[in-house]
Image (cartoon, rainbow, N blue to C red; front, side):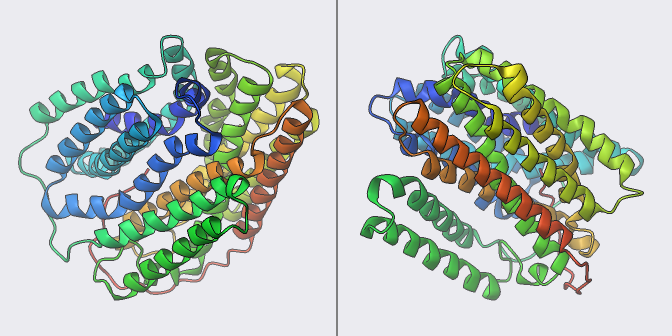
Length: 455
């Protein structure tokens, strides 16, 4: 039940990518820039609310928070499926993300609280594995459901959500652990969401508005102002979204920058590969989903390999190696793909290399980021680095839209997509440099109540 909710929330981060083109065709006059908000609205709101909603649930009721989050997510999925316009769909995606941001941390907290200490590590691994399974199943499931309609991409959440809700009402105990302390800074989370959304708006509309137009410059100005207010508020608030003391730990700060750069590249290359197969090679949604699946399937394999190598190779070098593999995968694809589809020779090798890189880099990055934090801050630190991942995902989609623009003809499309692959390769190399440059130095962070938020 709890793992099913985690699976459902993670599935929406992957399944919609395959449906991207079909959604665009169903709404007339929609540009790629407009369509990007179907992905970005979810990622931005999920990132901004993950920490404060987790803390609110810890303060009042994890069981209640889980049930409310599940209801919001399931009903919002119905609204997504029923949308008769793009912006109605985007609004429903915002609500869906809010539900996911509440049910994800509460599901983990309930897993930890409901099993004996001896079985807790295994239970958390099973919970985390459900998210990895969603990454592998998402593209294929999306392709299968799109043979019916893109609306089924969202309706598939309804039976899962209904079963999880019945299980929660029947199985979960009515009394659960509650914590005291100041209320979390929800307004700060709103400022952060506005800032990232404004930056994304400036990127996706730059090709249409003009990079130096007053509207584009205004979007960047709003981004700078709101993020600046968010940072100033974080210094003063008793329970900020991101505690400034955490960022004084050099290894943690560097890991967040590496996660941000890596996630920008990952989100960009994932959507770019899907758009290339559907718009240039003319693949169907189902064929695209099946073609995408081998990459995510490499992740658990190389994640286990990374775990075995961790005793002989430092975490920083494993992360850097994974990032370099991702860069090599992007370079392979840009050097080989052409107008005539040849998936096995042109796209698959680079995609497998990139999947292997993700398997080495991402789990190691997430597990090692909080190693220098006090135990009471480990869960909060994990939430912050996952927030950085979601921000990176939104920026990756926005950057792809800015790079690709509106190419006419194969040559223009090929040039734009090659520029994209070079960009993702450069960002992966930058993430590798950040990982290698991390010199761990323990800085004392004042003790406080932790929040169980991770994914």
